[in-house]
Length: 111
Image (tube, rainbow, N blue to C red; front, side, top):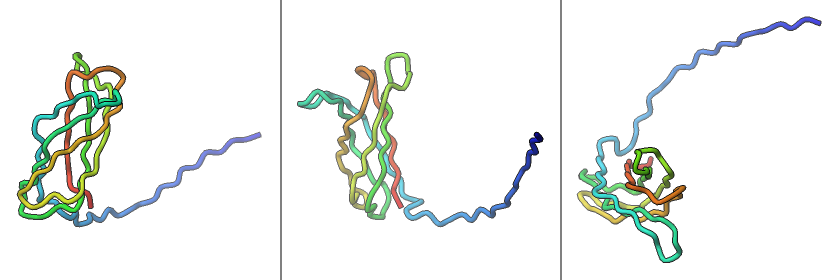
């Protein structure tokens, strides 16, 4: 019996696509977390659209940390329609292994 190895190489040309709302900047201010009426942890923050474009939808990523700065969970939210130079409140349920010391959010427009 004989085993023969082979290697296949393909060349792909990367073409950068124009990303809609690439100049839009979404700012997140002071993330707060709390337990809701059902005992689940939720994270809340104000999301501000500092651009002159209306954003039809965005993705908000949430990471929660313990006192030692280890990630213990997180979540995401997909708010709709953020008006130009406007702001909205984002509330999202997060899954965490224990009570977080802090949570952070980052947001970007969704294509």
